[in-house]
Length: 86
Image (cartoon, rainbow, N blue to C red; front, side, top):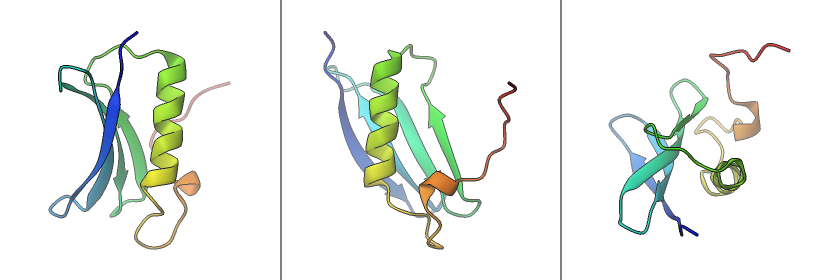
């Protein structure tokens, strides 16, 4: 079983905060990013395949460790730019 580690990082130029996911070889394989200018929350897997259970855990970690948007809006109220059809 592959062990994945994570860390949070901020980028003041982009006004973002991210939870990065790293594999055992110290390769950056995914991140969940909070965009404070637009109140968006995005996931990037950089083309890597992740187990759904691992992705769910990463999202839960991000919701806990990234904190609210700078304007106080909770991450659970992030704006959407895509709509999943029923």
